[in-house]
Length: 156
Image 1 (cartoon, rainbow, N blue to C red):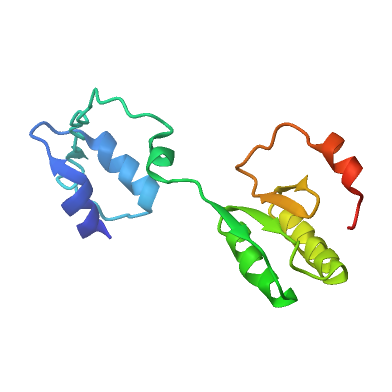
Image 2: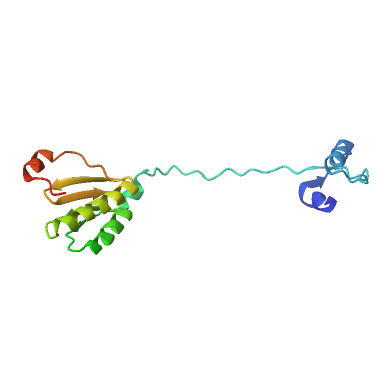
């Protein structure tokens, strides 16, 4: 250990100072440090200034390169819900048209998608009689179509 201390942490000085030797004895518990070994002091750290750049980068620059995507689906089978849910999990919005499905199966798909949207902290809105918009967390849905939907009846 004494060798490593001398090699990496300390460098010899020309004028004698035994205070450093006493400090090392108390710190490392070494009893046999000669007078000459105590004539070391810590090396100075030379700090180099970091290269600073005046380049201004927009916080939203990463979003500009990544395009948002809205997928359109018209499922015919219950098994189609896996592909729709995977799009939501990947961060894409989905519009689902249930007009080509049996009403009972469509209600099960709506329940499944509602659970998926809840899990990703997203939102699900009815935008037509049998059409739903499902969005992940990073989308905001504004507006309402409830006045038009009340006249159409509620299948699910």
